[in-house]
Image: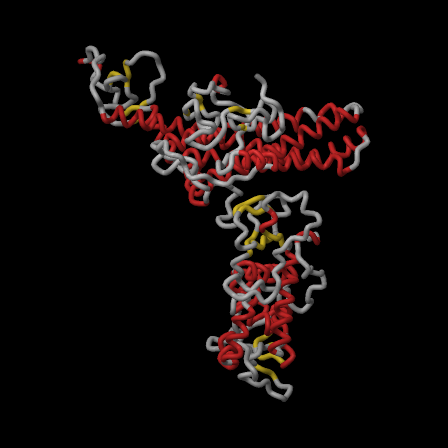
Length: 603
């Protein structure tokens, strides 16, 4: 693994030949006996997703080196062989502190528990005669039998069959005992190596690595397809979203794909909903009606209301009132029907789900396409731009940064639709604020994505002037920065439960919340003193209310609340009243220039 992903305890490749190495992080409830490599060095992190800094990625070689170091430590302190040290660590879940506590409290008891006997229970005879194998009951010369630490002799064929069967049964082969029914002596890796094939040894070695990872509460396997890396999480880093070297991003807490800003419970419900049959039931309720006679669901596929049920029922009825068609007159009078209300409710619910699911799925697809585009940019387009435009790698790095930001924003935007689906309908103020924040962020992302996709193309074909390239770089860099700020603020707002409106969704002034902004935004914040703002994106909700007169009521560009004409900021959300035409930043009503880009307000 690259040095930039591990700390100063960098790992080398000289793994122990006698034992498939393991090194413990000493699970997080244990005291950390060694530095676990959580820290990231500064060099080489520019190209990482923003959430890789809360973890370190471990390749299989890194994990094996950690295992080797841990075994060597236990072996050195307790004066044991590495085989014996490995057996102790397996029994104590790779916790060095637990091994030392048990060993120094009662060495004899610890040995008995794991099956490390000081002296053999059975001595081989000194004479060169034959010995009976306890499994096949055949006699063999002494050199044709083997035993573990207990001394119980078995022939090579029986040992081979015993060990191969245990490995085929799975990871429990790591705790293999002597074949003797009453013996608890441990079968170590030295015995396994004698009788297992190369393929079986590799499988046994993989079980060792698996036991180390699964025993450590701060390390998990990357769930990416075909990935064999593990992720060491930095506790207290705030976000559970992590990224592996294979480019797969996932939530370390629930191992689902990265889903910031939605919590794991909501993601679980959303994914279950997408994969369950519940929506089929909702469709039946929303778009079909039961036959009044046989109760089978029927979908209307022709224009008239005269319905005929399928064989063998053949009942004829009216689609609107479900009455027998033979006695049917008119059904134009309104009569409340619980069944009709239930169907209408199901139809509305189905339409709501379809709305959010379509946008969630579309943004997920766009995110994957953007990831492919990033690979194309890194592998081909950057080199083409460098050659045609004669620019250095540093001058073109903004392209990679823009595409990385697009991928992350697509991910966030997709999950905000899952968030919106579960937002209570009763709280209309929060719903309005959420939709506005989401809409602004989405609009900004589309501008960034469009610029990165299309405006680069001319520079891939012909040499353009230096001024044109500088303008393009300036525009894309600004869009990247502004988009990042606004999405960070969107995430913060959702993670805080849209606290800009109170829980009762009333029109009282909400509790102010500190959001992320640029230096220019900080200047505007100082100008507004204690008023906290959330920078807003690209569209004004009410273009006719950009600026009002001194006494004329005005609608907030952020939450659309109608304020008194004398108000200088919105009493609902604390924001300003006009949106910059250049960068779409929402400025205070009294400002004459944009606090984000210094563009003057057009009259």
